[in-house]
Image (cartoon, rainbow, N blue to C red; front, top):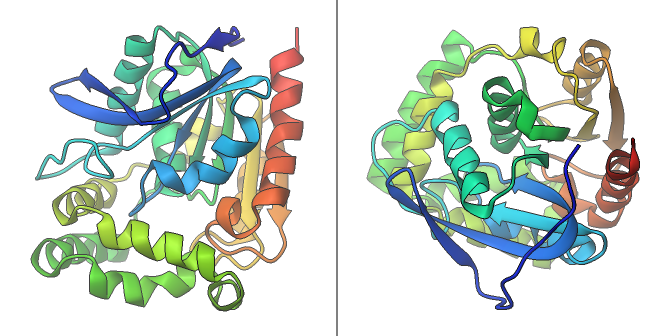
Length: 281
């Protein structure tokens, strides 16, 4: 299991690590059981702000990077596969001197978490997959992602953001949670188009992680939003059947971003799971 660790940095500003030929911007806060949070597309590390506030320094050390091509990390045009993301994160953990961590990923971040587990299972002490589709990309989805990559590169993020905001969040939450909607919109606007396009090309090649699920031995939390149209609750429930040591939570009133739409409930569920993981013998 993961050993308790301490972050020695004192600044509230993000840190930067030079790994694998790029600069990775990341937040590293608190002391205790280390958790690596992996954001989705087209977001950045600030999508985990409610979790940083809830967990850092309260028995947990949180490491929250901007993935390659997002936030303040280096943008590399071309194609960024899930394997590239996962190897970047493993190199960041090496930089921080962390052999084993709890891993939390949402949507694309959940797929990166699965790839991290596939490549480095001994480094994953616990696994949380939120709003995650483990299935291979479909032929139709592959065509759509490649077309979207070209659109983002040519047109930028604004039109895509306006089309996708309702969907990332429920329409009710966009209306009723304006500060959250503004945060989500701002992250999407700010995503570097070349980085987002590279990730879309990589996800067009997404493999099937379903066979991997039966081999996952780490304790696993599966979280979905009741109104998530991208990864409906049945996706989450189906993973629960396949992963031996797993628990599932469907969060009411949330869409694709339950950690932002219902942060108190998400944090409660995650804390209950992680408290069990860090104290097990």
